Structure formats: structure tokens, C-alpha cells
Length: 584
Image (cartoon, rainbow, N blue to C red; front, side):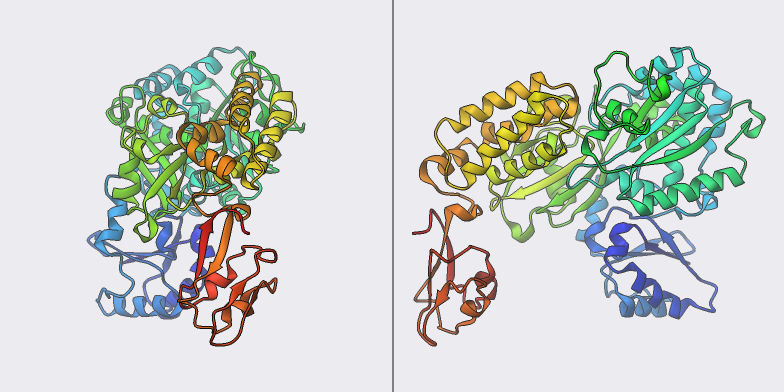
């Protein structure tokens, strides 16, 4: 019998520490112990414990605390599997339609134990690759059709071949773990839950291109990921799987970790290389490409976490097995982080070609409170908003690009009918404007001007020409900036104008926010027939904008009301209504 406790960042934040205490109080002095594993992707039910019996049967329990953890352990020791806190079949549907390669070890292996990874088949692919040689490795990657999972979707084998062909005694393999998209947490979960899978992929890449040094560039905001990566590297050294002449193969390799300061632009590979070199993270023109002149001006291969996490599976199972999944031009699986208004948020890994609609409704259970879906933001702040009537779009690089969005690294933010698309565009433009490195005038100045226009619109000060100006600015930035992050920065604005232009028009011409979210364009009013005169709303109001007599309808002073929502949250009778339109 095994007790697996989800101990990723999401589990710890949800109280996994206290669950561990409860389990240990019962399991102490027994033959059982709790195994701390990473997040299994079912973040909506954290903290999670998985019970695996001697026959390999699995039962999941979620939303646990110290007391329910103790109760669970007590029942299991009695040979019982309680119904309390057990995952329902509907919740388990989250795992349906998933094909787990990258996430296969997350929630299953102990990320702080190399023995756990090896017992699950870890490093078999590395040993196989040592005997294959570089040409056969690259050929298998080519057959697999693996494309970079960091967003651009560039063929992985092409990068590897270019780095291999570059003549130098010093080459590098760099893992881009600078995950900066709002709502994205795929890389963090993999590094926290299965770090050896990423390291093994990098080591195989080292064999393929002839590199002897691997560097993981990871965000300093991921302390648990950094800790577990370092532990994994130390374990590899202790096992003599790192260093000189590994397994008497003639291949030498070692790792180092570089923590980034959190600059979004350092997700762009040339900006990342500048940061690695101790300089300000700013992109440079290509060519030369990193494969010819990268870190320390030496040939360097750069892939992201998910790309490397696929490599060992491909080498062990063959490129053809990987290419059998997905679509003609987008092979294999893709990991997505689901956030926003879905009932079951978390990590999913699905075959390419599945529709957005299937992920949102079949896997994630639809929208909270059964509201109507409005759009899905894909590709992070540099992505785009895909409207409801296009959610049957298959997930592959080309199909997503046709919508105006991008695949990105895999973040999906789901929005319901109560989302203001203009305000959403402003949020992402605020992010990209602040994160611009400032090197390109179109990006540095253009994103700032676009943000200023969006702020005017949501404040009820927009003019008719603003929509055309935003479009013109956005298109100019796309073609005038140096790096991929800059030329995709206008996407959220351009796609919301394309698919939700009526909302922009309502904000500008009618001075109304149809979603009733922009505080300058909504009114708070008290329905006299529903108001009981309890005075609770006036007590909740932080600006003394509500007045009246007990047991008589209260009133809101429009000039004092700041539309904070405290009165609505406090009213037990639903008497306070939000209306679209400027307060009078």
C-alpha cells in the first residue's frame, strides 16, 4: 500500500503540510510511510492523496486537511476505502482524453529521489542514446515530428542538427525555464514533479549535438523547482551519471542552474543568452542563430522544459510512436495550464488535434456556475482571444495561428460571459508594456500608447477613432519590433477588436460596459422593493456612499460610490443591482 501526497507548490499552498502531519500521526510506527510527489495536474482538488494498493489499483482523495487526512489513513489501515473526500467519477473525467508523456511521472515519482525515477524506467533512454550516437538520435527526433513547445513550434531536430554541424570544442545545451505567462504553470509543475525527466532529455541533447555542459535558466520565483533541480543534479553526480566519461562511454556532461530575475523578455532565446552572460536581457538580431553563436559565443541549443521532457519517451519508444499522435504538422501531445472560469482548473496533456471545446467542457467540466463561455485566451499576454463560436478549432500550430492567437507555451485562460474583453485586452497590454525591454521604439512606445488608449476607453473617455488607431498601432508593432515577444504583443488587442468590436463600440459610443465590469461605466442602484432597510450595505461601504433609515429603502450617492462591490457582497436580499452606463 502506497500513500502519495501531492507536494508541489499548489498542494503546499492548499495545506499539504497539515495533511502530511495528519497522515504521519496515524502511519507512524507502521510499515507505511507517506511519499511526497509533485502535482498530478488535478489542481482543483488540492491537497490530494493517492492510495495505491498492492495490486496497483489507485484511489484519489482531494480537498483534504489534517483531520480528514488522519481519518483516511485510519480507514486504509483497517482495509477500508472511505467515501469521504473521494474523487467523484465526474471529477475523474479530468483524466479522460488525456495522453500523458510529459506529465506521466508528475504525481507518481518522488521528485527528490533518483531511485524513484529509475524504478519507473528513468535514464534507460539516456543509456540507449549513448549507444545510438548523435546521427541516430537526431533522426529519431526528426521522425517524431517534435516541435518546440515554448511557443514558436520550430522543428526540434533542425535546431539540434544545426548545433551538431557547428564546429567547436565547446557547446552548450540550455533549458529555457523562464515561464512568465500569466496563468501558465506547466514548466513549474514538471520541474517540481519530475525534474529528472527534463535533465535526461537535456543529456540526450548533449549527446546529439556534442555538448558537455547543460544550463537550466529558471525563474527565481520558482524556489521549489530550483531546490528539486539541484537535488536531482547532486543525485546524478553521486550515481556517477554526470561528470567525465559517463559509464565509460567517452561522453562527459554536467549541469549548472542560472536563476533569472523574472524579466518576461528573457523567455526570448537571445535575451535569455544575454542574461546568462551577465548582461541586461535584451534581444539581438538573428542570424547568427544560437546554434552557431550562442552562450559565450559558442554553439548553443535552446529548448524549453516541455520539449526536453518529451525526449526520453521518444528515444525509448521510437519517433514513429510519437508521430502517430497528433495531426499531420503538429505531432505528439501538448501540456496546457487551464485557469480562469473553468470548474476544474489544472494541468492537462492531450494529443494535438483535440479541440479547445473538448478541453474546456469534456475535461475541465465547463464553466463555473454553468455560465456561458465567452472566449479563451491562448498564448499568454502575447497570444489572442478565441471567441466562443471558434472553440471547435483543433489545437495545432497552424489552426491556432489562423485565429490570430498563438499556441504559446500552453497557457489557457477561460473567460465567461461576465468578462469585459476591452478590460481583458487592457490587462494584457499593461503586462507587455511594463515587460518591454525598451530596445525597440515600436514596442517601447507603441505598447505604451496602446495602453493609454485602452485606459481611456474603459474610463469612458474613448473616441470613435480609437479603434482604428489601436489597429494601426498594433499592426505597426507586429512588423516593426526585433523579437517574437514584441511582434506578438498586440495580439490580445487585435483579436478582441476582431471578434468583440461591439464591446469597444459600446464603451466608446454608448459609454457602457456590456459585461458590467468597468467601474467608470457602470451604476450601482438599490431596488426599493427588495431592500429591507437592514443597513448592512451602508456599514460595508468604505466611502459612506449609502444612506437611509432602518426598515426603509436605502439609497446610493452616485458621486461618492467607488463601485467596489462590498455592498453587493454584504446584501442578503439581492437588492443592489449593477447597471451598464455612467453613474448619474
